[in-house]
Image (cartoon, rainbow, N blue to C red):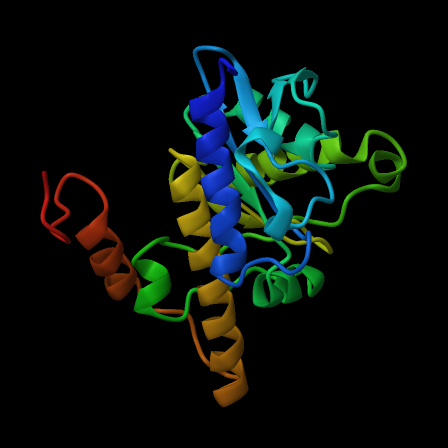
Length: 234
């Protein structure tokens, strides 16, 4: 019996939600879950169809992206996950997809604008899109540098990864994260939905403006912070 059974189960369940939510096609995308005490994470194996995936297939890696347990090769994005876990010590799960609308915005090298209250319920500003990666990084340790592309973008924009839990990697696709793998999946689905809404908004009205500040503040603070009042509480 693996010492990482619970962690593998968490990663497996997160991965299986991605096709169910329409966020991945074929073998596109991956999800991981971390165990901070053991300093390892479980991630989907590379190129294995979701229909064939099993709990025991999850690969356990350390924060240097080295395999700790597993017979299969881990996701090609493992080094990106490792960088984020190492740099951000409060996140518990990461999801990467090539979902249609989020990826279209990433390929357009544009932030997802905050047009309405659905967006503001989760974020108080646009979803950032990174600048394209430098050639020397692409030709070097590409997946490792993708992690720093994400970290550096948030730093440059003065954004907190605990509040901005999603990003578009320019010319590539979305990444999301959260306190758990399940929350990272949730954030991935939210990212895709607001990307779709923003696209449709601009089709209806190409001159649509950003959501007014008072509505941004009201909707975000209804769900977040000490004065939040959405839901049933604890």
